[in-house]
Image (tube, rainbow, N blue to C red):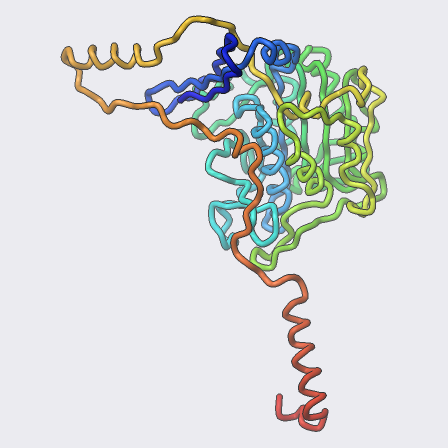
Length: 405
């Protein structure tokens, strides 16, 4: 599969992305850029960004927590962080819940406009695997020697990842229930702000991150970053101490709220971000004012060494891949012909594969939710009955009310 852009007659840059395996055929994606654009591309050092996305809540009434986490997962993938650099932890499987009127889907907008579950979600920890112990082991790298280290060796039952040393930036997003100084994991255990701060300090001591962005959407979320003391760490929270983080987007068909207010406006902000955006972190701090969130979002930047105004949002939410310059022509069909010849010598002939059409990257990046099923707005049914009763009273009077009942 080839995808490319070439500017004029200038020499072009050939950039292979990470390898994607389709059955037994390896598909490489290539991009072509001018030398001028290549210099701008190489100027970014964010080639090893990781995202740790955690939802710690179970049960159907916490549907919005799973939708929040999957929405952030969709955004970081769209901006360039591959699945191999995302650790996704979901404490419940809302897509397969028997109460879900639309099986195999999770929606983040009312009227079921956007399915964030999709068909390519890779969950690394699910159900009862989402524990405080596993979360801390992922952050600190203290995993058993038997833990798989690559997606090619992850089996169907164990989904464990290890963050590599010298990771450039790490985005940690947590959606959960909590209180002053603690987070709840599945209503059975908790993690305190002191324990979380110590885990980040271990990461720093082990050189497991260069810069870290911590985002938490929970009640009294600001209490979770009060004890942080590690360098190069920036934190955001949806509410201050003593405040609740409120839900948003109720849907009558599903029967629960689909999002939380802070994450809803955060994702609305990220939808306008593309890999070349110049939007900085100060803009991210303003995504949900109190007039929208009802709670008061907070942030902490005193531990961060750079000025947030000079830090691009894509430094954390996006990623660029290391590339090599070449002026040579690469024959992509050579290996396939050799394989066909070896198969003709006596081995059973297998199905051959061909390259698929160009991936519509520009359409995917700028895709917008499409309206599908129409649902009456909130209060529509009640207003309709009120109008019917007013017309009846005006026409017949209250003495005929007994004929209705």
